[in-house]
Image (tube, rainbow, N blue to C red):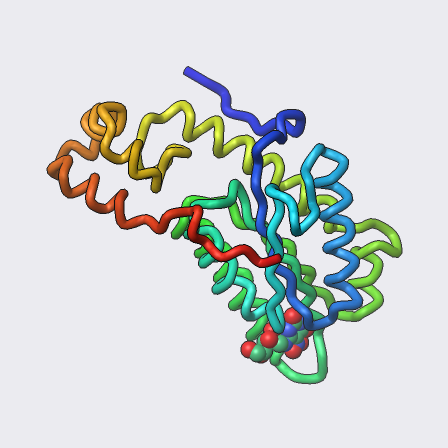
Length: 215
Ligand code: INI
């Protein structure tokens, strides 16, 4: 049997999307800086013009899951990182936003099979948020670490399981029609579906080269 464990050393070719909420951007901007610092010091090119990191800005934390899910579905990223700050006010608004964003981010990961990091601070005060975004520590760094670890772990898990629904060739039409895909289908439990059905589904995945960049 095997032990699967993410590493932080082999980061060549990993690709990330970072989705950031503009609401409370004093805080989210600092989380972004911490996250970029982490990724950069682990060898990731965080330049938006480069090949390893794309960025998307959303109005607030509530919108993070939708965009994260869309990016994850592209098949282009090893992990998507969501950064937000939900801070309690005088009304129950906080509770609605924080409940939806946490559930939505979890769902985005489950639905796509791509790690989606929950980098959202939920605090009682702005002071508490700032303390976690650079004044004392910067949790943006931890969110970067989670993304690196999960990206590496998922590559290992997928690599060990020749399943056309989960391996890194997912969405590649050449792979979809290959003998390897056919044998993977018949060796992973998908043989209950006719192979042609599965191949058709794979071919419906959007071509990653046609995904719009968020530069
Ligand atoms: N968005 C946040 O990111 N943080 C908050 O603290 C917050 N509060 O408290 O209102 C917040 N609200 C906006 C929300 O995320 C949506 O952008 C908005 O409701 C439009 O859908």
